[in-house]
Length: 599
Image (cartoon, rainbow, N blue to C red):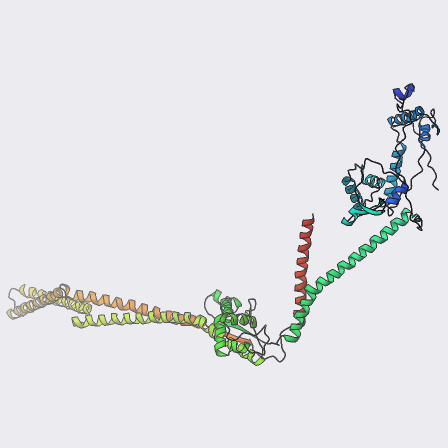
């Protein structure tokens, strides 16, 4: 049994018409008291919505009692009150509302809203109630007011209706047959208050028992427990779906890859070898001596050899010499690593690049090579053949340059030697044509003879004058002196004529001497050119010897006894990481797209 709540005291600020109390309420022309509109009782709400828990509401107080607290002068009207008394009570209620005092209906609505708030409804339920209120044309002031108004009109805001509930069987009988008819379930008019009519119970039926009342704390604990169970169930379902996706997209491909590596893949044997390219000692400049012993001197050659060994040319040569394609088309090799019958050069080159791995370390200048084959002996043969190809390629890299340099220097030397011989032949020819080996000597001899004879002529002339100065000279001596002077003069004339003939004309000794001097100078220049070309030839030969490259094998290829590939465990773990990464990327992309679309 619920107790009546104590009435609250209100201080009313009276206005002019309410203060004097002289205005009389208007009389009802019908002569009867106007009854107040009844409110919907809680029993009818429980009958229409048995699942909803009704909040505790205080017992409604008589209007007279409420008005008596507001206006103590006027008392509540008794049962046999006249029409004037009922009108006076209505007027008092209007005056109370004009004084900003909540009526009993508003106080009851506030209590209902407080009770609904204590139910602990979720935000989703409140949004459902607001949408239902808008659907039925209500104007609630809040979500809790929407729940209250819907429950007041007998509508459960949290119940989902389907198409089968739109038509429900009617309980009335039509005519004498008493057959039941179906009536459509139409939404009630929110402006009309439902009519509470008595209902009959079927024969032999029991009266429904009132459910035991549960405290809000217990009900909240039950709801929290139910939410936790739903969350745990949802988490278990998500975990099951996650493990299913992981098993299908990650674990199953990893198992297939591991099965291939452990059961199907053909074991491969690797033969490792190392070699480096050396340069001859150079005695050239300071920079040549500084870089000759380092890896920078043969860096380009090593890169060229590496490129050649990984080229298609080396693959074709290896196939022609050792039979590369025939080895990898063996049916004993698994289908993934095996070549097809009569493969093209491109298909064979793909396998060649996988099976021949060559690396160059620029810090040490060492070329490392690893050859993989299904047979260790064949792998060693492939490695030795490739090393021989590399050595031949190293020799060919500098051979042409060295040969060109030496041949050019040798050709220049031969040309200088031939020019020197031609100049010597020209000199000999000139000497043979003039019948004089030394024209300058001839001219000098003539000059010296002329000088000598001129001195003798002067002496004879002096002797002749001395004889003639005697008054009685000896005739014989005078005639002898005169003869000597005449002979010397004739000789000097002849010598001077010879000198004149040697100095003028095309065949003069001067011309012949000039030609011989020119030939001698030409011979001297040819001698210098010949000497320079000889020095150049010797220097070129030294440089060619210094530019020679030598391939030295530091690690010889040795056949392996145990298979090197495949690396079963490492490859399986790598496949797992790859599949897991792909799945993670796809999952993150899908979740981001889903979030963007939902927002």
